[in-house]
Amino acid sequence: MAYTVLGINPQHNGAAAVISDGELIYYLEEERFSKMKWDGNPFRVIIDICSKYTIDEVIIGGTGVSEDNYLPWTLENPYFSLVRKFNPKAKWRMVNNKHHLCHAYSTFFNSGFDEAAILICDGAGSKHGFSIETHNPNDPGQIESFECESIFKGNNKGITTLYKSLFANRRIITYNEGEEKYPMKFDDSITLTKTYEAVTYYLGWSPIEAGKTMGLAPYGKFNSKIPPLFKNGRGDRNIFYAIGYPGHVAIDQTQNPEFRRINNPKDWHKNPSKLTDFEKDLAWHIQKDTQEEVAKLIEKAIELTSLKKVCIGGGYGLNCVTNYWVKKRFPNIEFFHDPVSHDGGTAIGAAVLGWNHFSNKFKPQKTTSFYLGPKYTTNQYLKTLKNYTHNFNQYQITPEQVAKLISERNIVTIFQGRSEAGPRALGNRSILYDPTDPNGKDFVNKVKNREWFRPFAGTVLLEKANEWFDMAGLEESPFMMYAMDVWPNKQEQIQAITHVDGTCRIQTVTEEQNLHYYKLIQEFEKITGVPILFNTSFNLAGDPLVETIEDALKTLLKSELKYLYLPELEMLLEKK
Image 1 (cartoon, rainbow, N blue to C red):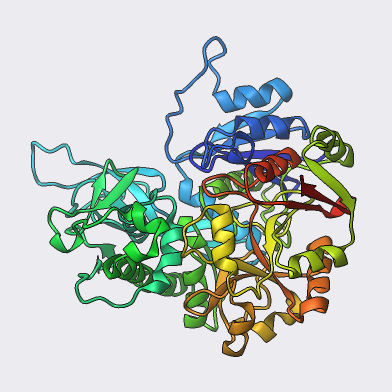
Image 2: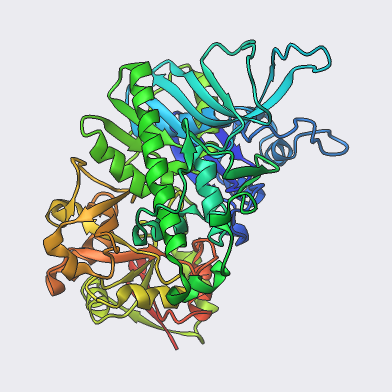
């Protein structure tokens, strides 16, 4: 019988994943059900999993949550208690102080590499405690620190830690390694991911919305008024400071007059005329400086392992600008950037860790599909649609007709199959538009209620990708992990998805990966000569991606979106 492991990330981007006999068969984040962005404690996802699979073992991850958080009467861990009610024979254990290791297992497992260096760049992972030599009889010499960057080596025996950079809540002169046998770097200055978060916060967003800073960066340039942000590989502690680390960091405006606020960033989020050069230049600097620091870490990973395959995960791994930049910087290195690099992906890592421990037969799989959400039947579709007949007209439709509708510059949403794992829409929960519309970016940003400067992605037929984009030696980009250069002679043709710096985050697609989506793009090419569709996530600003057909219908009803394409039913819904 199959041995099935459930991995859980209980914290922000709460998620659960299922590995059965070494195969990743399910992944979903709690926010897709709860509709609360970045929600934790994935109880609804666990219930969905337990209603479909027999779970043999539960592996609970995290970043050092107390193991004493038991329920009354049974004195059980709440996650295990929930699983046990469906699967009485299930076992459980916690790996909640191995956050970076869970990232590493997720990244390496999905790469398909037999052997690789693994670099994890994360804001704050698990807590590590150490004894230190203070030479002060009144100082007990105990230190609390948190993972920031880690380097591992992965092979068919599992994963070995080679190096860690840690944030320490106080300066350290010397330390005792204790049971830890790998080199470590301690410092109380802020590491690269947290500096990016601090700049993001300064620019008026939640620290977790760093993708917006990445989108703003190309509008900026070098600014001599902005002091060096990094010293010796860490964010300068005279600029950045911790507010209850690991939760939050910020820029110290009192000690740095050049950073003192002269406006409310919320104003320019909607009005570009109120954006200052300093703010967009600061975004440019943090993007450039963190890229350089990541390059140094990649060099260190290669040096420690002597390998030319590198996996990258952790929250910074979603920086698709850096991902493309390092691919060009290291043309002879084969990279894998984890599509579920954020903390949700540690649920996959926890499940893989559990499977590896059970089977002792660790074998990474080259993941070709990240459509891992729940399956929905035709009857579920039709039952839901009956409740909305007074809101929508329904038509039978062909891919040719949908492509024509898009070519006439209508926004068409698409809903099909299982939802995508991770934050990127890959054609199953997407909003689609004509990439040739010069005003397309402004139009769709307004409809989605997003900031004016934010770019959009494109999905291109794999066999045509090199004609439109500089692939930098990559064979494909199926998970939208790279913001690639659009060839200069093609930029005018796809202005809606070409960013101000001439790049576009792209997804390549094949018939095998997504049949209906592939056919739709083929038909669009027949009409326009462009084998690309403008693709953005099926949600409105501040909302998680839609998960169910009802989510999709409700999103149309509360927005200017008008059309929903259901390719599995060959149906188009038009809002009345």
